Image 1 (cartoon, rainbow, N blue to C red):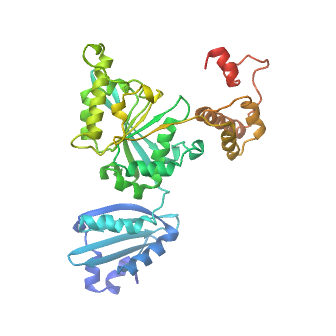
Image 2: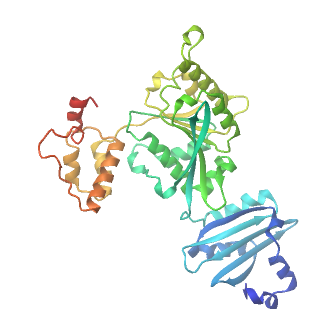
Image 3: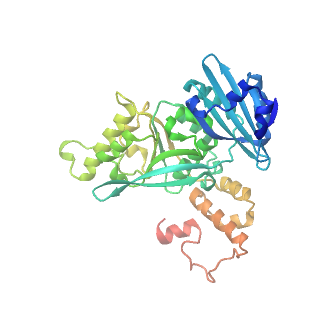
Length: 399
């Protein structure tokens, strides 16, 4: 290894070596930039490259070391540029290759050292109705803001579920269950899993779905208004999209059985027929699109169109459930909250929804952090209809 002051590189390097280092990156044609590596592991990574016959050069730039490692094969070149930061936990690496097949091969060399502590986002393209046509609302959700936890699904091995789903040839994953059981949160947890396992998951998704530039980003299409699903423009958007994940949230009517002939009497019937026909074409047509449809519904699966949910097209149908008091208490205590408060809040309740528990934990933590009393603000019983036990709520409000 040669350690060189950048201003004196010609004095310490042979002419041929200097020419190699000064080569412009465009010569390599293919590259990945700003791959984050844990600084404490860069030395291990560099040693691994040297064992693979990479030649190393070191420059000192702005009190940081820049390592350039080059390997030349017959008519092929691979180059890593690594800046090791002395003041941060993360260092960054650029990878350049002359041939596209080398890019994946040599990215696999670095991915075991890749840090998860970088900007990671889900880029959401929400399809919405805009006048007579459709438009898009574009927004991003940062990894750190995804509020989803495996704790709320003690009946699922979520990591195995997500991996198996994206490995599979089937397109549809349907999540059913009453409101509040955590269907949408499970989808958020799925996105979180993909970002956490970015390097591994990209091989199961469209390459363009995942961005290797300045951030680690996952691009998805999101639909909340199911009335747009029967419109031709929606399917035109899907035919052109780079995303390989479509999230249809609260699809309670579009998956009901199709109607035929004179039974088709409303625009809703027409839209439903068009949606299911297009869905069947996308997921089991002559040309099968590489798109995963994740659908949530409050409907009983027995009421849905069976053709859209048959095996071979649908990976699985999961009927999510509420938590038992024991499961809920485990989550409560994991957040370092008092068991007595839990018992008072949920006495006589046989099941507890994930949404209710999550909200109560969040509000309790906020109250404690701001020194706000957890005592009831009602000075008489039966004043609050909502802030009471479920059995009393059901008698008063019917839910």
